[in-house]
Image 1 (tube, rainbow, N blue to C red):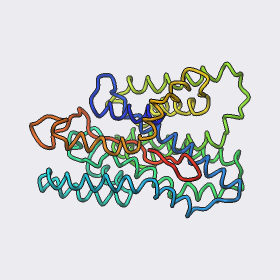
Image 2 (image 1 turned 180 degrees about the vertical axis):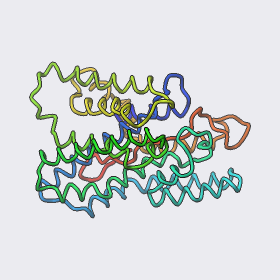
Image 3 (image 1 turned 90 degrees about the vertical axis):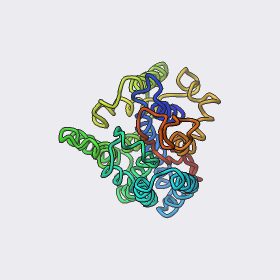
Image 4 (image 1 turned 135 degrees about the vertical axis):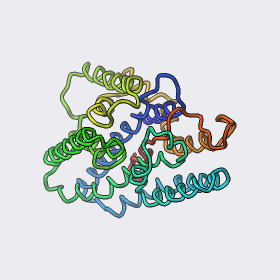
Length: 326
C-alpha cells in the first residue's frame, strides 16, 4: 500500500495522464500511519510498557536523519539556483519545516494547486507537519483514556473522527479551501480512521472467509477510482476523501497474500518500492524542481510537473523497534 500511495503522488506531480487524483496518496498514508502507530501504542499499553519518551525517540530517529539530508541538499540547490526574492521565502519555509509547522506556513503563503507553488521546493513537507502535530498529543490521549479500554477508546475515536470530518465540510462550505487542505483540524479524521481500525481488531471479526477477498478488492477499486476520478476541482478533503480512506481501511482489514489484492501488494516489486517510499518521496520533488535535464530548459526553476508539489505523510512506524515509512 505504501508503494501504491507514493507512486500515485509521484505520477500526479509528473502530470501523467489519468492520475488527476493521485494526491490522495497522502490520505492513504494517513490511514496507514494511524493504524500502525496505534497498534504499536496499544501493544505497549496492554503490556504495561508504554513510554512517551521512547515513542518520540523512535519518531525522531526515523524521520529526522533522512529529512535533514534532503533539507541540506535542497538548501544548497536553492542557494545556487533561486533568485534572492525566492530565496528569502525558501528560508522561511526551511524554518517552518524544522519546527514541523510547514503546513501552517504554506497555508498562509500558498495553495496546493496554485501555480506559485512551483517555486516552493519544500511544499511537500506539509504532511509531515500534520502527522507530527497529531502525534504530539495522540499518544498522551491514548494513555490518559486507557481506562476506557479498546471499546471505549473506539467510540472516543469515532466521535473525534466525526467532529474532524464535519469541520472539514464546514471549512469547505466557508470556502476556506487552503485551511481545509493543510491544517490538522480537518485532516485528523483520516489518521483517526486508521486508529479506530486498530482498536477494532478486524482480524478477529467473524466474517465468511470468501467475503474477505471481495472486501479487499472493493477497497482497491475505491482507491483506483479516487486516483483516476478525482482532480483539482474536487472539494477535498471533505466527504470525497471518504472514498480513498474507506478503500485503505478495507485493504488493511481484509487483504492477505492468498488472494489477488494481497498478492499484488505483497509482490517483490511493490514491497521494494514501499520500503524506500519515504526517501523516494522526499527526493522526487528536489529532482523535479532543480534538475534542468529532467525539466524544461527555459529556467533553472522550471518544473516538469503540471501541478505544484503536494505531499505524503511521513513516518508510520512498522515495529516496536521504530522502523517507519511515510
